[in-house]
Length: 269
Image (cartoon, rainbow, N blue to C red):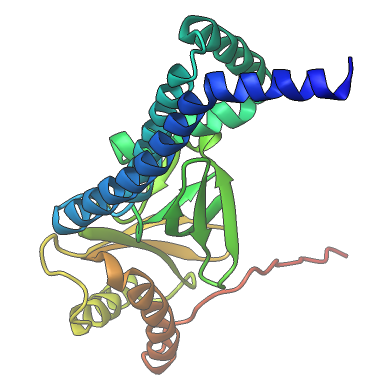
């Protein structure tokens, strides 16, 4: 084909479809500007409302994606593209991508379930998938934990939403359990009284329910007391560690022995 003929055909094509192309571009430009305004208004409304902070990024991203897809479909329709065929092609492509990214889609679905049913939220201390940490972010595909030693743990939402999990932050009170051993031959009543005094002296230990102290086991090297006390959740570890230290210091002063594993060997001639 000669250059002049080709140029004429291109000119005719542009003249024939030029207005539609310009109109579609104008729709894309104006639509993008409107979407930005809508997103900003929605974000302000979410900030003013009592929406869980974990849900805000998810809702905004989903709304933005939906509005942009609708805008692109509108622009393509102005160009005369048959939407039925386009949607069918898009659906087939989505199916192929979904099969290839089944694990990612499972994590996406898990993230949606977590955000909707809220088994935990940002700031909660949870134990899941073999890790314990504070929830710092709930993303659409992963949940981010911060461990007490400041490690970052990234857990995929797919497994997190379908497996067992412990949330340590849902209740205001927690029970602290100790196993405190004394040597055979020591005065058990005195040991019980010393433990009771140590528990009563700690203001963080709640008076109701009352502290439980009972002999739980006659072990190989010790008589073990089961000690159970209720505290406010933030005080759990402080009370636990302080009681261990106070028992060690006080038992020695009161003539009580904290035993260690030992074995008696008898020699027969």
